[in-house]
Image 1 (cartoon, helix red, strand yellow):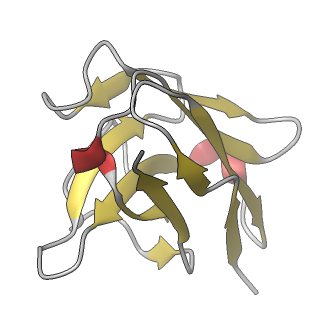
Image 2 (cartoon, one colour; image 1 turned 180 degrees about the vertical axis):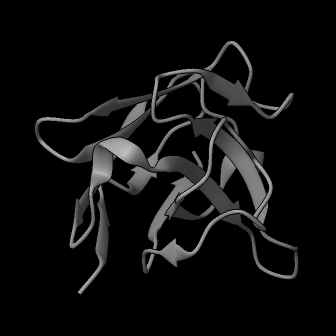
Length: 123
């Protein structure tokens, strides 16, 4: 059974940092493209960052320079380091996995999704 379990969300002040983790199991993690997505209330789910099985990365313009996606293929874990957080980063954050070549921040290529972890940026 495929499982993606996110953790690390919480309440942080503007300008602060958080690191999200996504523990993966039930599939060959190292061969899958992985991504982070977010969804704020009343808005569509949007791609935040993606990482290919071979390490190439892609970011949404809104997070470029502030967020870093990475993966540990030994620990089967995906990470999202988030710095200089802004109130508009507030959302439920989801990790996703897809068996495709390359890197994507679109939802289409992703087959498996986690349940999400809430990030709230507020003073």
